[in-house]
Amino acid sequence: MDHRGVGCREVIMAAAAAVLAGGLGACAPTQQQLFDGRTFSGWVKRGGNAQFTVEDGCIVGTTRPDQPNTFLCTIGNYRDFILELEFKVDPELNSGVQVRSESRPDYRGGVVHGYQVETAPSSRAWTGGIYDEGRRGWLAPLDGNPAAQAAFKQGEWNHLRVEARGDRIKTWVNEVPAADLRDGMTRSGFIALQVHGVGGRQEPLSVRFRKIMLTRLN
Image 1 (cartoon, one colour):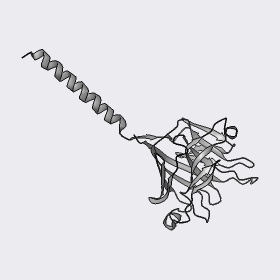
Image 2: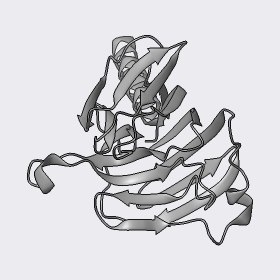
Image 3: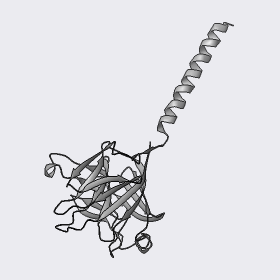
Image 4: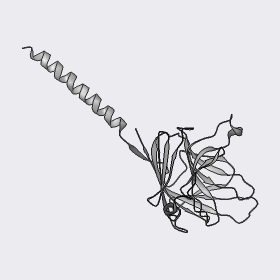
């Protein structure tokens, strides 16, 4: 028997196993922190001119009068993922979290558009519902989900989870299942934090976001 030949086969088999293991590892979900708690590295502002600041490890969005909706957007695009964050919103302010969203010169002059998960404290209680910002309007309201409508906690930090996989987007508010949408119009895009326009209102309103984590899927 040629022992050198056995050695070559063993090396080849070991290399193949390493490649296979590496390939499997590359497909495993990976978690990343989208906000470092100190800077806006990896983010860009689009739309209006509401103010975004960093305070105590949180992103704080504050309204300004006579400004359209303003968005703090990730520079990167994301396709299939789980997004988790905490938010606290002023009782009078509408806000939201964009996923798989876009801003293109060929669409309404670059307006931010795409799926928005509502984070609004209004009496309608649709926080966690899915709205198509700048495009088709409501896709998954929560009027048929009383448990989800009761999940939002006024004046407290609330936990939001969004799972985007294929043509399906699902949401949870404080661990309570909220929206479950199947829609294949947009499969990839940026994530953004919204400060809604308030018309001519002079008194500022604010929304806070923290612990923004994203897990890529496959």
